[in-house]
Image 1 (tube, rainbow, N blue to C red):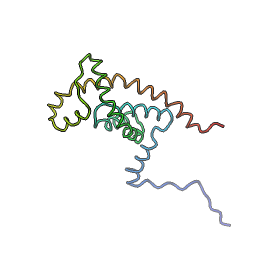
Image 2 (tube, one colour):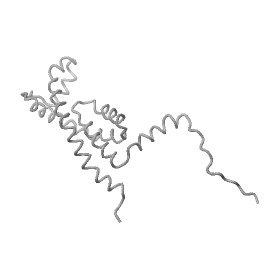
Image 3 (cartoon, one colour):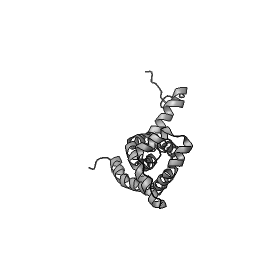
Image 4 (cartoon, helix red, strand yellow):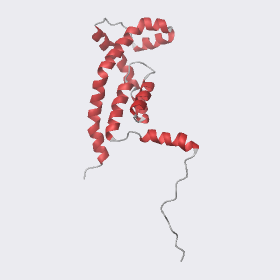
Length: 169
């Protein structure tokens, strides 16, 4: 009788170039920070970053925050895309709140006008006309961001923890 002697599983061959450079980093990003508490933190940070009242900067802000805090990039970027319409709706709210904070009389403009003028004017002229509106909006966003982030974190964490435990028996 010829018995095969097994000393355990066969050694795994080293990963190839594409697996090391593309597949493994992508898998790491997809599974990074998937505990309930980390997902709640990712939702909080992603929401706050996605509502920055400056068009075109939220993807980079989410990317930087996610890398710095080792958060799940797919969740951050998906949330950023989903919150785009809300970001647009809140720009004027942040501008008006910032004007109130700074005790400054508001300039009458709409978001449509702001976007149209951005395309028409030089950078310098655009900043001269709308620079204070940006400072007002950024001030209001920075003041409200910690509260919004905390509210989202503490509101989502219990539900995510329950979901991770599975159905009650």
